[in-house]
Image 1: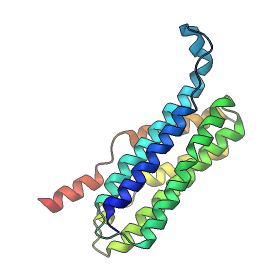
Image 2: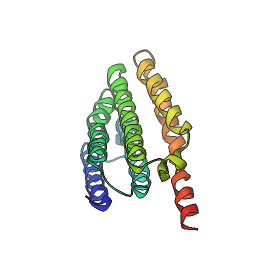
Image 3: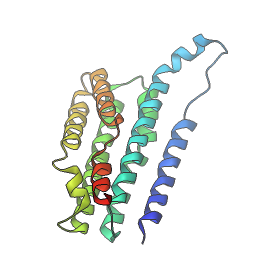
Image 4: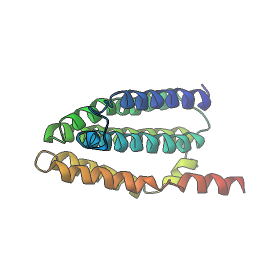
Length: 194
């Protein structure tokens, strides 16, 4: 299978995830600006999750550009990542409807943690399939950004039971860390082309 087909499939799944999340947004009861206040937390969760899906989409795109071949293990690792991301609409909706209650906030963190682990597995699978001169291996190096993200997600998952708003802050921090596009892969690909 070519990487274009895998990328198109993944793009379609991510687009559906975003569509499901936006369909969960409810219309305000009323027609004034005041009628939006009760929905702020729901919109905040939607925006945060939309940002996360966008970050994964962007980085996934770069990740696949390093592949020379697509193996069965890469396909399964990719599906593993998409599975966890497909749970985001559920967790987003529940956390928003519950006003950041401890358990829904922890579940959201658990899903983000598992998606980050799945992304790492996909990265390692691509590196293993591409051999010792893997472009991706050169690009990610020690993957400090990835390790910091997993640490924040794990911390947020644990702390959410006692201080859900602190967990929310951790989720926002990780999103901000990744909001600046990861240029590592682009730099390595550019150096190969030059």
